[in-house]
Image (cartoon, rainbow, N blue to C red; front, top):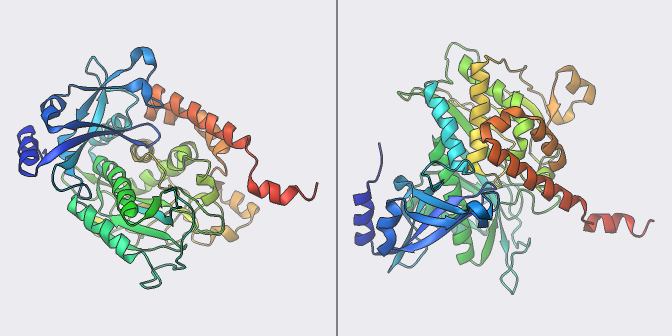
Length: 445
């Protein structure tokens, strides 16, 4: 059932003195875009008649087919608490459509809807909950972000060691004003690193919430004179920022389909098959869960990030998937490899599609790896059939290129455009000479 009708939107806009509405959508790389309209144009927007130039958005369409239309999702209407309270600013998340009114196949939300529809046809509802990590850094005199932080706090530290307690407080109050249910927040392991967790929700709601979360966190950080970054590894020698994704399936009546009290781990066959599907397709979809050159600087041993395609029945942080100890309606799996640079629509769609493939094909996961994977030899890994996640964006590109399943999930348009862009990014990176290379080699050779 919808949360808002058109009449509700018009009424709220008048009652709350909303003057501007931002029609937001996401490009294939997870960058939030928008067109701002005044309330006088709201009727046109709600009738799906607002148009934009799709050829100006990277990965969308060519100039000769540029007209695209925005179809607002009424349930995503929210007022920005950090904007002026007279003549307020609100937003609506939008789907992108072609001039003939068909959904645009290059819209990440469309990809997510397709996979959610498949889950529904199989009798499932997909739920996901992210654990979003980010860094807070100072800005320079010109207002540009740096990687400097004055604080030296670590995991779960409190004020005054944690100097950003009040910043996180403002972020949480803002998010709650926008309808978020915040479950926890704390200082993370690295200086300047933080985590805010919000409540599990249906897949599309979670993807929308991740986009909103990033926007709000950046806005509130800037009000405090700081820069919030979701770059996976902004500094060498410290932990990177991940976005662990907790996932489960329920039936159409809301019953958790991952729970089975009779199983020794409390997991159902559906849960094992879903997990097996993700493990099977993980290498091909790593480019979606870890999309940047920089993402692979986080996926190295010794920094609390997984590097092996394996799962653990215990809280084993070296495994890519772990099973949180909660059972009952909270039974779920936790995928630990993704980072916060993801396009949440594509990453969640890929995870769900892979899991459903595991269910359809009745896949069986390998044995649980309950020891420290970082301490295992290459021979031990091989004997257990444990593969490694791609070590670079270049390796991830090769895995993605070979994966026909991912092409089917994303569709020809996004698969091709995404691959072309990531190949260009990798070529550009390979042509760079880094500070490390200069410091390591210049005086020697």
